[in-house]
Image 1 (spheres, rainbow, N blue to C red):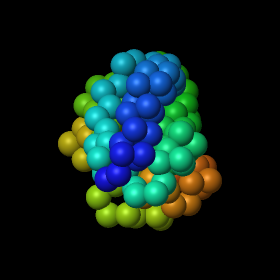
Image 2: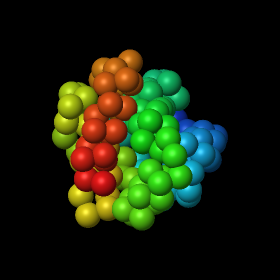
Image 3: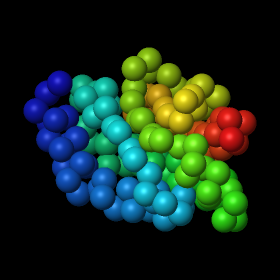
Length: 136
């Protein structure tokens, strides 16, 4: 990965991640462990998109799904009991919302291209909600 992409990733981690983490925790109603495989999100010549794309591809759909799932104390408790962590990665350059999320053994994995179908936020949120609720 080039210097520009590495710098953009580092700036995102330093300047945006804490706020996004807080928003996710607020929607879930508890502290959610998030593991991001940053190097898999970095794409040559696309560092200029990280600040816009990464929240729309990964974090905003997660917030929206948690908001939809955690509508009452019971739902929040069940999610908290069953969700060990969220893993964000791009290992397959998946661009389809219906293959975005997987929830197994307490780990919610979000695997998607960080620069493709950026604006399909609603579809990714619906996929997260469906996958998580099915396993709860």
